Each structure stands twice: as structure tokens, then as C-alpha cells.
Length: 519
Image (cartoon, rainbow, N blue to C red):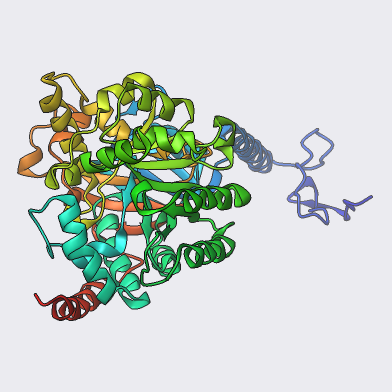
């Protein structure tokens, strides 16, 4: 036998069996077969016997309690909040709430007590006085153009572009400028709660490197344009650069490469179609400016006797809706559109980026947001570049989108707070074709989330969390930013970027930009 019994002995007249080889002590024999026992000996024996039974009962009870406890699954991170806005299909709100994260994915969203019983976290972020919500999605910007912030203001779009921005870019755009500018933009976005953004610029491989360094998620498009620019002298060169960029980042965890023909009015038909064909070949998105100004509309009508949207439809640029899973198109602005245009965009599954601040600042017009929403167009919010905004604060974009819609329609119920929040989160993700990946806090999606403080005088009292986020909150109220399960900023302390170094580099480069443009 495995448990070998050792010899027996008599001690104090009580028959005992010694410990087995496994170390288990057997009960004393109290059956009366002992000889010459005294009352004291019998009492001692009885006490020892009862003690052993009690210990055994205690052990059995403890084992039962442990067996009844659920096994806690080890995970990497839990974020606990005063309120969690999931932005799921039911727009579920948990007060309090917690988000359980393992690796780069959300595994559960529930009450803190429930999460604590189910999971053992390697790290817990206690945001019990803060609102937890999905990271914001900026559907259109030009990240490096933060270096031109304030360089030219109070101008119409075409004058702003032709007299100031295009000449400034011709003199100053370089891999270094793009890298330094993107780091500054990434710092601003992380500090103001943006976790995913769509970009269109030059030397996009530098944008991608800086974006990954910061830890952000990006849909990044290499610009293709008819005239010579810093990284390509011809559209053919631009297409070749774009293809190399796609191959470099096609399977990246954070970067989605895209093809970005600048606009209908800056590219001919052949270049526009070559851009779409390249995107379809590799199954990547397309980004384009669409119907941003009245001048663009007039040009299209004069040259093609149709709107910009209809013209792109006529040449096959939008493609069939069946392409959506492989080639998703994001149209920035969409201001000067009619009902037929809206129907085309809906039918083709095009994502539209509404940029209220830059459209107002450049007096470009007002996008028909109510029509887009009524038609079911995939609509998101964008800041545009900081050269025309002049910041990358998506909270400000939410507020202005709501205010502008109310003003333009004369309807105070237009774009209510919940709708504005939708446009900046799950709506933005849908506009980018990424709604299965991000935009809401749901199990299986990437862990892209932020926490927002509600303790300032400006935010007191708090009756409605969604109302406060849209109408009161500013970017600097964001406390913590997490992308792909990685903490990029915690309690306003940057984890991935050296804030002082990023700002110092930008200021050094700005001095050279100022000198180059004669400011």
C-alpha cells in the first residue's frame, strides 16, 4: 500500500497508532480494549479525540467555503468608474461601473463588485470620481499641420490654401517636420481623449511611426495630388509611395494604411480611379475631401454638369456597397450636397466626417447633419487640421456640432447631447469602418477608453453625465487615456511620450517655419 502503517504502541495506557508515512495521524483507540486506564487517562484520551474531530470539521468546512468561491480569472487591468458609459447598442450606463481588460481587449463590463468577484487584475485604475467612456474617434485631421497652427487665420478656404498653406508646405514639409508635428498632435490628442484618428498628409510613414510611438490608433492616408509636393513630384510617384506604405503597415495592430486622393478638384479622373483601384487591390480604406466649399460645387457643375458627389459616382469612384468590407471610403466635410448626393453616400456605404469648427472658421458652409442622420449615413466628427481649427479637441467638436445644428435648423432639439456623443464615439468608428473594433465598451472590442474628471467648479453640479460631456467638458478634463489595453496617460501623466521634449522640439521647428514663411 502507498500509505504504509507503522508499528503500534501503548502510551499512557491508551492504544495509539503512529503517523502513517503520509504524515496523517490516526485516531486513538477508545474502544475499551485498553487495560489499566485511569479516569484521568480516559479524560485525556477523550479530549484529544474531540479535538481531532473538531479540527477535521473545521478543515472540511473551510474546503467547502473555498470550493463555493468562484475561480477568479487573471486579467491585466480593471478600470473602475463613478459612471461607465458603454455606448453599446442599448447605450447602457453603469453607476458605478468597471471595465475588465486583458491584453488589448475588453473582456467584461459590469458593476465593480461583480468584476471583483470574477477577475483578478494585475492593475486597477480607480477612477471612482470620474466618468469612463470609449475613447473619442477623430474622423478627419492632418496631424502634422499643428506646426501651422495660427500661421494664417480669418481667411476663406481657397485663399488660405493657395496664398499661405500650400506655399508654407512647399518650403517646410520634410520627414522631420512631419515626425515632430505628429508627435505634438499625438500629445494633444492623448491629453484630450482621442484614441483613434484618421489622417491625410505627406511622408505618412513618419506619421505612422510617431503614432505608434505614442500608442494611438490611426487610419493614415498618404496624400495623392496632381501637382508636385514634398514627397512626390507626380501622382504616379504618390501612388507608388502609397503602395509601399500599405505594404509596410498592412497587418499592423494600430495602423490602418489608406489611400488618400486629396480631392476631386486636385486630381484628374485617371488619378482618382487609380487611387481607388490601389485601395481595392490591397483591401484598405480611401480618404478624400468632398464638397467642402461652394466653389468646389460650382467647379463641378461647370466642368461636369453635376455635383462633386454625383461626378465621383459617375466615374465609379465610390464603388459598389459590396466593397465595404474590403474598401471603405471616408469623405471629409460633405457640406455642399443635395438629397440625391446624400442618397448616393448612403447607398454606397460611405462614411462622412463632419468638421463643424473648421467649416465655421473658414466660412465653408454647414453640412446637412440632420439629413445625414435621417438617411442613416455613417456620420462621424472630425477636427480637421489644427491650422484651420485651431485645436484637436474632440469635446469642442461635439459641442460645436450640436450648437451649429441647432442654429442652422432653428430647432433646439437638433443633434442632442447623446447624438453628439454618438458621433464622437461609435458613430465615428462606423464612419471609419471600424465599429467592430472600437467606439464602444463591449466584450471583444479593443480596450480604447478614457476617464474624465467631473470635480471642477465648471462641472458642478452634475445631473446628467452625457450632457456634461458634450456641453461642459473640455479636453483637459481627461485624466486617463488607454488604447489597445495600454495606458498612454494616467492621472494626466504621460506614459508614452516625453511631454517636455515633444513641446521643445515643436518650438524649435516652429522658429524655422516662421523664418521660412517670412512671419
